[in-house]
Structure formats: C-alpha cells, structure tokens
Length: 395
Image (tube, rainbow, N blue to C red; front, side):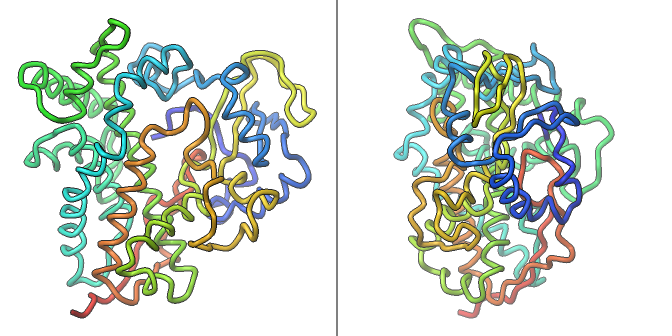
C-alpha cells in the first residue's frame, strides 16, 4: 500500500530498472545529486551527504506530506506523518516497548511460527519468499506484539492482505480494499476495547494505558498507531526477501551462513545497506532552503533516495558488492534523527530469525529470477513475488 501519491521517475519505469536502480543512482550522484523533476514536481536527492542532511533536519523539512487517505484519516495523523511536537508525544507513549529487552521476548514465538511455515513447503521443494513467508511472518509478528490471540492470526493476516495490499495471498486483486480496511479498523477497535477491560502484557495495553504529560492517546491515535505498525510490516518482509535475493548472487554464501546466527545478523545488516527496503522517503520543505547549491522553495516536495545514499562510494568502500562482514554502522536504511524508525529492532529481529530458520532447513537454495515480480511501489525496493527452489536439508 502506497500512502504517498508520488510517482516513480521515468528512469525506473521499466521493471528491470526498478529491480536494479543502482546504475541510474550512480549516474545521478555524479551528474545531478539534487535535481528537479518537472514531470513529477519533486526534487530528487541522491548522495549520502544530502540525504542525511534532509532526513535529519526537522526544522527545514517536514514529514507531514499529502497522503492518499486524506488529512483527517488516523493514518495521516500517525507518527509516520507527524512532525514534533506531536511526533514526540506519540513516540514517548510507546518507546519503552520497543527497547531490546521488550522485543527479545517475542523471538521464540517468531521462530516457532517461521519454522512451521517453512516446513509446510519442504516436501514441495519451493516457496515464494514474500507471499509464503515474508509478509505472513511480518503480520504474525505484529499480531504477537499487539497481543492478538493465536487463533485469530489467520483472520488478521487476511485483513492485512486485503485491506493494506489490495489482494489475497495468492495474488488475486480485491475490488474494494477500503471495505476491508473498515473491517480491519473495526477488528482493531474491538481489540482496543478488550484491552481497556482486560489489560495484558502487550503493545495495545501499553497504548491504552499510556500517559504523557498528563495526556492519554485518543481512539484515533490508537487505531493510527496499529495501522502504521501493520503498514510498516512491509519493511521486514521486504528485508527478508532482499536478503534471500542478495545471498543468491554470491555463490555458496547461503550455505556458509547456515547455522551461524552472528553471521546471519551481519548479512541482514548488509542487506539493509545493499538493497534498502524503503528506498525513497518523501519530505516537504518548510521554508526556502538551499541543498547542494539548488534553491528549493517552501512547499516543494523532495524525495530522498536512501537506496542511492547507501551505495555512495564517498562513504562505502566497494558499495556495489554484498560484503556481509563490512562495517555497516553508517547506513541510512532506517532513516536518521527524529524519525529514525521506531520498529528497527523488530525488523532486524524478524528478518534474522526467519532467515536463520530458512537456511537451517534448506540446501541448494536458488532464486527463480525469471518468475520474480518487482514491487511497483516507487517507495519500495523489493519484490511482490520471489519464488525459490531448494532441497530439504539432510539431518
């Protein structure tokens, strides 16, 4: 689901270019690091230096951009599209929940669910990393965080497919996703009401009970946060899919990593740099400002290309190679500054655990590149479908 009505550039309109945009990024970093595109009415920002400067400056650049759901929708008022001080209020209500000690306690449940889903496909020797594993596991992880009962996970997953992806798990388009979104909001509303009456150790209870400077979250705040979390589930799903795609490009690397949890963790981190799931982030200029010598006027829209910044040779040695044990601290995959992704620990944990379970259970894993389908959303660098074949691991 693309919430921001910004088209992709003409240079990436072809699926092959969308899959591998890096030659174009390199050309733009060299020739036009900040350029105005009149066809899209946006400024594109390509270099690490300038992407970091835009994303890290709340005084000059706003996240309160136009959305497809309208300004009064709970999603448009969520943390994702809120500047300080509202952003800070919403973040303060839940930041403790997203600390490592809180997230780590969900790892065993995620690992168990991942193993079960992978083992369903072992006899057939194939699966779709996004549709059979990545996206379902993202939704299951969110269900665990929200405290949704296990018996309702499949219902929650169906809502996520239809309301947020506009299709079913097998790829069939649904006629009116908004109908399913209303059902999803009703489902979440019932969950919130249940936690008001019967608190539990979960995120919804934390949201319901949160109080910051004497203020509680409104019902719209609660719905907006839950939906934001679900939409954010596309990030770990795409991260996992991009990791498998990247491993496939280096002979023998998947087998080398199998069973080595620390190495898998580093490979996930390198994937964040090498194929950043959120490849582009929109901003709105708050005032007249100069970036890389270009005069940007108040109200102008900008797109910061994170995937380009993370391949900038001014920062990363040999940026076009997947080097899983490189020093990766500098990448911008989760943004920077005030709007650094709150769910980054969840995404890292989920991708690491699911990839670990997959590599433990399969041998001779190979991506069926000819059958892969690129995600058309210009904000995302990833796949709608990534089929793989494998042999079940012996022993």
